[in-house]
Length: 298
Length: 298
Image (tube, rainbow over all chains, first blue to last red; front, side):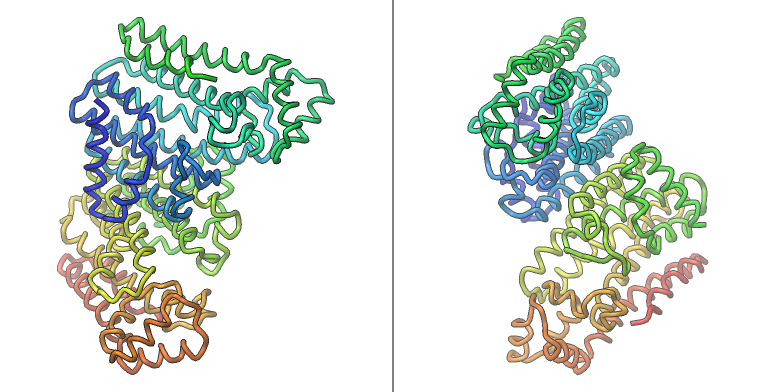
């Protein structure tokens, strides 16, 4: 059923009537289309639903294009990123085009759907700035971190589920909670993978987040659990290239203090809440999507 | 009456509830607010109109932020550009925030207004890409140039006038023609100033467009009027830093072939058409705005 979404995105691209845009879009990896899957699983496959899913995926692709420029990322899904291939400027411009086409097409859906999705786009652009700002110093404040990942990652999943609920006359609040919890858990687990996966599988250096200055949940928990000497050492390693000894020390401390498990458990609580909400509504496909998230290898 | 628009933009920024965004926004020059002026002159100063004008100016500011990154511009309105002060990444992120806040707020105006403005944002992002692509080789095709400046510059003025007409129950087609003609003429005259103004007044090097690879209308006309030896020489100078001799040769040729006047006359025809349309409707303020455009020093 995702094929209909792919075809709709292609149609939106063709609408733009610009050969260069078509050629560039063809170079982008499609990804998992998780947001589209959520939308279709909630709201079925009517034309309006497929359009909404296609719009959300275009917006998500736009955000990744800008994200990769901001993060100086050379790869995306283990392939060279568009900015690596064609330069930052092209990535910025294609991002703007996908954003604006998506937001324009929203006006053909409904005011409610346009409002909920465009509000999330605003949140995610604020989240991007906050992510960068936070990485400039060692952030040990958990609620600031959670607020940031809500804006950066969860807001668009929350809005996707909310839009799908609106389109299918389902309970908006419950589905938005489901989408938000899934989004938060998704980001938490993604952050864990940066620590637990070896660099070859990940397609980027291990502990890359911390080297970039990002103190994700395990680092915040680790900092809390450390004595002041250890804290000082951890802080001294923040935001710089780590040698293998330093990497080993961080990982060892994390296993010592069991912070990986603690962060994973926190993600799991969110996912379980999401599953309970969906089970109560007989939404087994949606429970399954949530379940799969905590069953990712890590 | 523009004060109400400034206050509304400030309110939109405060809504975002992010100190960093507020601090960055405070660093942006306000510019002439030409699009807001158009909107208020057409539709009055009701809250909805002021909001629409504020949204359009936020969107315009966002496009300039990205534009300056794309063009490697160090200055904007004779001051250091935001990308020069805080880096490209900050300029990209603030641009995304202003775009998305603007497009979100549009959903609170009306579907018609949201559709017309977001369609223009799409056009201008396509125009930006086309501008960059065209500058990679010597473009001597006038209609391609005109289509690009329509997308890049005229589309948002056209949409601003169209949105204002919708909000005030005036004739959408006439006002959109007015806005489009004004936008086309504005860009043509801006392109002329790059040739006729000395670099000190301009705040950037003279013939900067041509050095950047941009063949604006006078270059296209010049190319048409040249013999093949001259054409070859002109092409050989395209897209590179020019010494004073080469600059002098280009300017001399332009005065010889009277292409500055020819391009200005073309802008003037568009402005006169706009004035005629507005005079027929007793819109003297709008005629005045158009008149002022061709009376700029050049």
